[in-house]
Image (cartoon, rainbow, N blue to C red; front, side):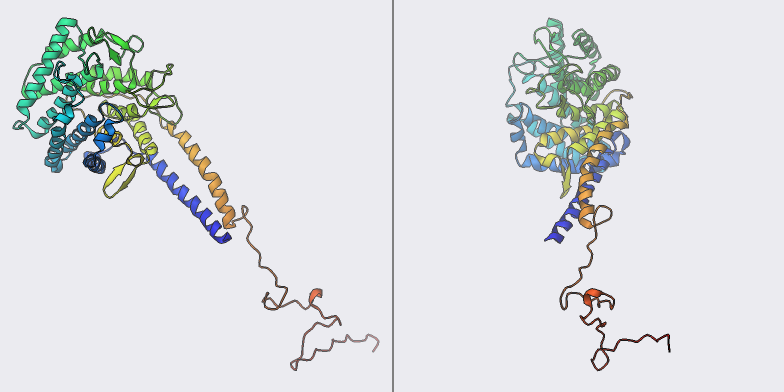
Length: 466
């Protein structure tokens, strides 16, 4: 039993060491900016395989129970990630189009529109129309001029552009409603990006609308941070709450498609004001530094003030803005903290408990700009963010290895067992020493026998007198 316990102790130390080595390697996982197209595609395929299996198993319905757009995002992000894969791999282009169209068919359905209001302008609100048009535009961009979705894209983009123009002309606000009486600037950022994308694909001139939208948005920024606010009054577009990471990461991802220079400027401000101050966790805070509030339905639970969903989407922002340092840190954090497991061609995080979270991360890791020019930013953090992980893993392994060395009997931590001397016949195979007083006969003889079995007489010493 003791031998079994010792063996299991040593085995535990080896297993923990292997897990620690895996975590360290994940901390140093290369970001998408350091990978080739082929490497990005190879990384994305097992993620998409898990998402497709989850969607076929009803995961979108389960995600809808967690937050209002869980169903919608589950299908939309799956389709968008496939479009990025198809753009990076000519061999996978047709498969990517098929999967993206499959996702679009679910978005463009009664189930896809179920939680949105048809009476809004545009119909079903800017959240639904913005994302649906962006996904359709991506399909047309990948398929080429002959795409059958082209006419529908033009019509939907015209409806979005018309709604933006009427809102600007009547209220001066660039922000449309997503739900009755509720408006989030991040939804309008998606919508205006979709209008710009459709214009480049169909030849429609949207330059004036884009210019007016940006100008109006600049007059309605959060005064505390200078970024676009989290929520606004639907009638005026004036801020009703300050900037927050949950919405800001979406604003920045799509502002890059509307005006890369403005987006890059806001990305630098965002990274300065919302960067994590938690050692070893280079994610993003839900609220600016110095503001400590609880999470809500928009952000979900916060961990030390950090937004997990915001951090996952911020990774995509770092990629499209060319921020290599932030992209590397956010990739390493996601891989190490997500406890990813891959088997049977599928890669999932946290045991696959939150498929829509996997979808956001996959979308970020495959990110690429769809429109606009090139921009490059560098906001940190440095490699030293990993030091607390090294310290924590070392603190975990040290006692495990100490127990393992003791159990293995390795000096000076453990003492090797000495052979026990027998006290009875057959217990000790080592012959007794003739000089061992404890083994001598009572008569003082050595106990040695002659060949006939009789004791040998003692040897007489010569008498010096003779």
